[in-house]
Length: 190
Image 1 (cartoon, rainbow, N blue to C red):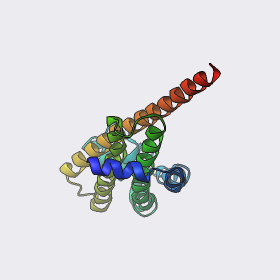
Image 2: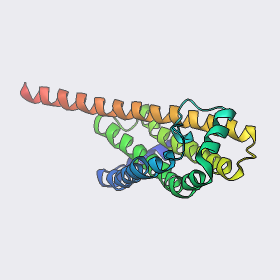
Image 3: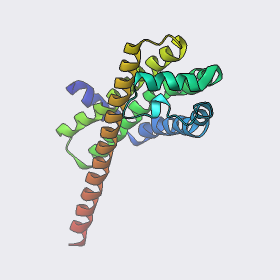
């Protein structure tokens, strides 16, 4: 782990952060503004699996899959999920590098908080696991195994929780940077 954290610290340059963050935000924007609304047209007002941070029951999953109909399921499978298989990797790398870059601006390189840069990688992993389960739910409907829904729901909850932690660490990095700059400016004034 230590070597991975050191590698991330070395890789976390401003240009590299932007080279992953910009495409991540473009893909995220495409999903939010284009593909998710397309799928939601068929969902009868029900939240999609990806957008249910507290998980969902087997009954809910079957109701959603039914409400989507064959066209909605195909839209989910062939329009939304291809982008959602690109996004977790971009998110994981960009937020990992961004956190490391922020921490490097205000902390010593041996600070243990740099291990928090691994959190986005874990979020990306659980997002992929969630997406794989969603693919299987969409393609196995109407014979969706209950265990598959249970795993999908658990992966959604874990992904959502870890993603929230990513934003907490990102906010922490911003606060540390602001404090360091404020202290630096106060010393210059004296």
